[in-house]
Length: 377
Image (tube, rainbow, N blue to C red):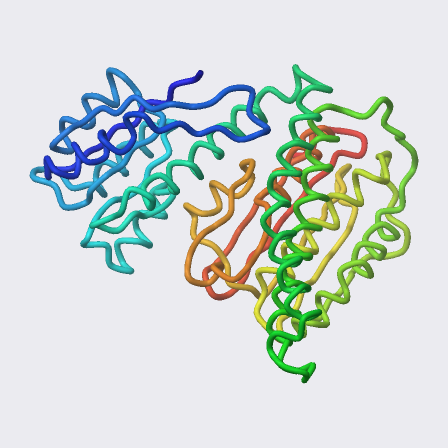
């Protein structure tokens, strides 16, 4: 049995005692976990008291009210960010406005629980957070544990696929039994939802397999002379159906063959993810410009999109495992939160660099530099 420390910072004694009571005998246990998790709840009535506890006995999870006597919850969030504390923060407040939500998310809040909340709402949030903590710890162990972690990833995969498979099965049964009537168009919503779940499952499977391969290592990397223009063209053709659905124009720019000593499969993973990301977060009718050129001993790859863009705070997070940017613009965009993490790990394997510039509502630019015969500056 593992124990996670939960700090509740709220000026209402009833909220603090309620959280302690609900979680006192609560356990989280998934089939893919080695052991169950229980919770040690610590209480603080003010932000100042909460910071003292964070410094003396750092919790794993922080349930934080914003409306506090003295310093406010958002200031506690800013403190955690400044000190780079590895704490998952959930806001619990009845004063949560859209402006507060955006600010709190920018400062690192993971989720929100509105007051008053039911025991089930609290437990459901804690279950999701616990799974996130476990996956983060598991990812950190990938390099050392090899086959066992790959097996665990498959266990995670099977667990995460259960819900969408059950939904698809339910829709198919309803269609077979003609529960909505004899007309095919009466089932369009069910078909669309099933297709969305299939797309999400495919993305999760591919991302988990790529991450396992990157972290645990192949038996042998096949380093050869690779024409990156050919790899880019293949990746663009793979993503073209998705781009057509979004009416996003794809443009590839290069002058003849662009050769690099590399593993072709690894380059394909990098390019697939860069194209996918640029299309997914683009606007309908937008464009993606993918440029490859050699310059001063480096291979420069630039991907420019006309999408929703990101804030500087969001850019700081995007290469972390299982991280997805959450805001009003991304709420209907699915993904595993692994694609850019995989890209960063692969580029690191080549002693390369990846940098991002972005303007909200205007688009993002990803710059990748891979060394050819000397380190890239």
